[in-house]
Image: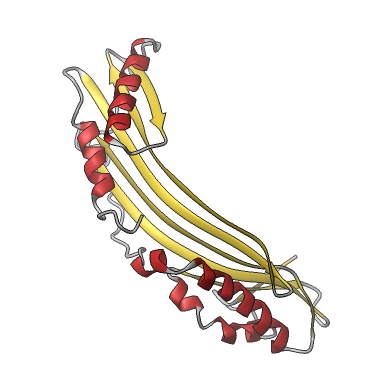
Length: 230
């Protein structure tokens, strides 16, 4: 995923939306994501999974009829077939005079703020390092305070996601983000509520210092460090 140019999905959505025929309105949604989830308990890995999703969704409106199609691939031939399928499906749809894609005028003033939510370095973090973060969080939390009497499984999770939406009337949107977190619930001798040691960041490099966050389990709750749940 990290090898793809940042604007690749937007370019693809623009190509699909621009392939509409006379009298058609076309909207393309392109998405690509990758996720990692892992759990450790008592120094051992309980589970570890990695999953990726990519695909394109197309909506075609013609003669007041609407058709959809989706494909789980971004290969050129598959994308072209998906557009053709959406076009064919529109021919069988029930007509509705209100079908239509959004116009630039209708979304005027709704431009989302420019947010820097992507950290390229997350894509290159080895799986072994992600497991180590969860193991170190578990170890550090156990050593943080003698009042901690029980620790449930420590978890690590991250995601890289990118999406683009373009329609044939000129509306465009593109977003991409990364997020990662490490957490574990604990049981304390003197707390009626169950605290949860947790850190959420944009990049795993910020979690590498997790040997210090075990102290959050015994400290007052604070955003991004520790919280409590019933």
